[in-house]
Length: 391
Image (cartoon, rainbow, N blue to C red; front, top):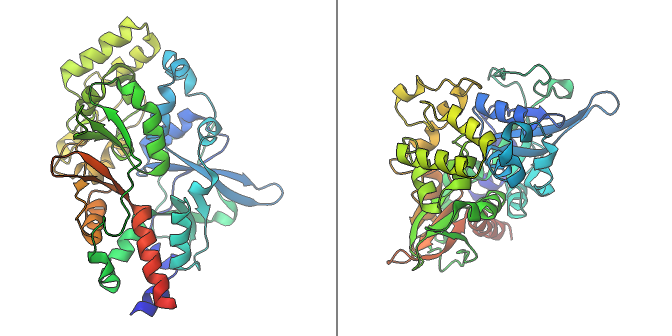
């Protein structure tokens, strides 16, 4: 049984995966934003393709809604969001480490995949064959089109979550290690990102960018260190770019209410509008008023909401429809997913997979934050166990 698991290749993990959405490096941030709203993917892959000489296609990075939100929150950009979106996507890619996206061949082994992830890879790009999925046509702008790869090849993402789900299907092979507590395994990371509940949400901007890069989250705590909620990139990815206005004007606590399921309360929306006026941020104000004029902010799991997601400027149905996977949770979007130091590895693993995140907060009985357990730390444990099967 152990040998059978070790014999698995990347291609086995990619069965049924749809082709990823891709744009050329020549695209603007506005193109990427349009693609995100028209796609079922939370990330858009960015490619360089040289068909004139080498005929080589390479994925050079990925972008998501959080990248765009953080970009718009910068002082110069929030003055004129429409102008900021005209910048090339390379402006955002320059902040992304090269190892975050890695090309791998279908014949790579399971251990090689785990090694890539432990060393910083978040998305592995894998060529796929004879897919049965029909390519969705993006709502294209006149000057842009999805990247066409050499030879008509298509690729899919392989993520940390995909690998964890695959290992969970064979969790019995990792006994008794999988039953050990996260504390005893030494995989609780105490170097965490936090922001005070009463502090301006803008002070969390760097932490949000960092949490996206390391695939964690920002804990919102009170003065006693008690965990109140979280500002999670996984949640923000299912919102729209107007969260930038909320981050700029609200406290961290109010931002939690803004991003909760059901959309921002009207009183908080009015606060955002008022503060944008006070700061003379009329460019962002115009955009914010357009998006808040009766349009749902984020999808709930009910079908009735999906019938009312038309935007006057951009097709948004794809964005709201794909948020079902996250909003299916019977909880507030800003409610943190937690465990305790004594929780078992397999229990924490199941929690994270079920809630579609790559981490779980670790708290004490009084709800004070101890640290965080990440997929990459869990995979390190599984890697060591698998290697012990070989030697």
